[in-house]
Image 1: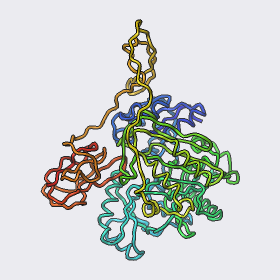
Image 2: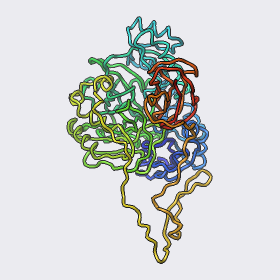
Image 3: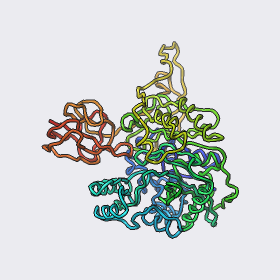
Image 4: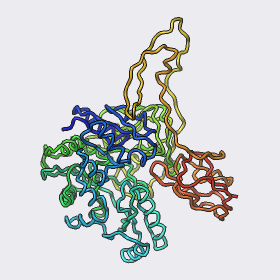
Length: 595
């Protein structure tokens, strides 16, 4: 296999890869931004290299810096995780040109399947029909209107290079076409560097079901069952499970075989996921994710296969050590995404510091967490805090175990969506398995939820009683030299040693200070519009002197990779705008004043 691997990612997926590498005696190199200087994945890796900056574009997405880190540390291969550079074909080529190994599919397959338009062509060629839609990029809202009039409304406008629910807008009538196209293009350009979009029929009550595939460079390929990802909000997955309660064995076999056909059509190698929409016993090709999925854990639990291990072996040129007939799923598994967001406030992002973390335990419980006690969730990155993975002999046992685990898990000091998970798992529709991708947003009453965001502290106060003879104490510290981290053991007089629990200060974003006020989705009700969260201003939608009404959007604020419209709470005239695109703001900062 490999001697040393660089992991070009952060959080729980970086930790996930580090763990498998340690099991095989592979040295690991972590990379990190200024904000992540003391992050958990950095502490766990054998080496760590600072990329600088806070924003992803300054750090994790900076290919030159990542390649330089590989060269400096002597890493032989790179694992991109998911997100960031995982589906960047140009970077995969750069890695190969540098004489390193890309732990993922060939660049050609990334290009063909990463572009939603070309992937539709590939699916058709493989005999796996996609949802009716355009097979080429659209250039105007008129094309959306024409498609809607022909195929009926609603119509989905989607980023060609999108993923993770980004770059998707739904037009319910011709009047929505222009705004939807503009929003999809803006988000696509911001997240994927390309504003190309296409359109397709928007199904009213589909299930989102995906098939995990593995292929080696010797022509062997298998499918490892399916995952049902139908519990979603804003096209973001919340709960996943395997097997799907809505898929028959025959449908499962056909979907698996079709997924393999599509992957072979593009010469796919390594781990990948073919996503489908299922409705009324029919299924359609949706897209292919050319990377490891966030929800890969539940496939591991039911199939007994370490997918990261498989990725490493395949990238090292080994053959798959099993065939399709050897794949046997056992039991049922759920993955619950624990996010830093408040489901009682329209899923408002809630970056902050974890004052105390308690992990659940017991049979069938696995927690893939990117953070622990003392760690801070930043506005710069995804709001995924941890993945609670639960296995049971059957679906009902797994569901009950998940509820038990939700009552044990704790991320004190941080508001999370854990109350939402309890509601979902106890809902009659979910228990019966009769849901769709629209179910969570349209059928679940979230008004009953309660969250507690009050910080909590644990532990006894320190004993500061002076001693007659000052002892020498041992302290461990982490220092950084020329961008690389080293662990150092020191012996210091107790008076100079400080508190062993203290952590180094973390760089904070520059932001424009407001003039007071308190948080709220639109403002404080008195004409002052304040930010309800920490975030970055993407676009200001009004001008000073403009007349507006209550509910009109003032600006778009990005926090934790999500766009949030900030609305006016009162009628009036925009007297002052205190921010500009690119500014970072904190909760409570003044954004605008309305008179």
